[in-house]
Amino acid sequence: MKILVVGAGLIGKERITALKKISSNYSMGLDITVVDKSEKLLDEIKDEFKLQVNSNFNDELVKNPDWIFICTPHSVAPDLLIDSFNNCKNILVEKPLGRNLEECNKILEAKSDDINLYVGYNFRFYLGINLLLNHVKNNFFGDLISVNMILGHGNSPGMENSWKLNPSMCGGGCLVDPGVHLLDIALSISNSELKVKGGNFWKGFWKTGIEEEAHIILEDNNNVIFNIQTSLNRWRSNFTLEVNGTEGYGIVSGRGRSYGDQVYKTGKRWGWQSGNSQAESEIYHLENYTAEDSFYEEIISLFSLTSKNISDSKIYNADHISGKKVMKLLKECRNELQLKEIV
Image (cartoon, rainbow, N blue to C red; front, side, top):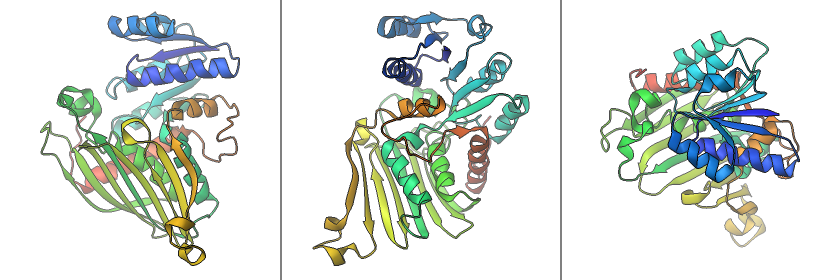
């Protein structure tokens, strides 16, 4: 299978690592080539992964790869994606699908029906989140009451010079990246239309013109309340996903590395009646999970392979339809906060 990875940065390396692990674990012959304009990054890829590299995207595109993984900044990805449609039928682009809904629509207008287009919402494949999403689908918590999500990226000196804080390169601030991950989870949990009920934002630290922290309240057709917080200026990286239902609750915390190991626990309504305390009645479905395999699990699902960890999962890859739903909801959130379109 001929694989083209476009982008040799942080996420490109995550994809390469996952692909090489799949090639080894499943005895798959994956012919991987990496493209990037940076010769420095390509030299790193050659040294670390011993792969073929090229600085010219078109040279590799005309070889008609079986799969293309586009792992570039948001401003570069749309044109690369549209150019790929003529030479490849299976493509994954890192989230989001365009920097705004208009750019998303432009991409989809260029896409033909025979192209399988996926969006890299790898949060679906963190084991704790995946377990919780399946519990929701199986009505484990009863009727849902509320969902609370916090995703705060840790702040660091010099971060203002990164592309994620560049308004035109990213397409916005924390609502775009990392916020779209939370919007995708919200849509996956609700499986219905979500309406924006209110929110607020703050942009006073880096002063690059983007929202650095945003809080959004959503409501679905069943009156479930979604409380979403996303930030680029937390002093400590943190991730929390809490689901509260009429029969119980589920809590996922952490997502590996600086966020801490991922833990997933559930509890039943009035669980203290069967134990000495509510905490003692809780069930830990996952502990000490380093959460380093979400890209690996996502690609396993793309390739229709069987995973030992989540082989019975009913959570699937985000396709172009899911990608557009996220961008539509993002636009509505930005309108509520009166954030101007940047692109």
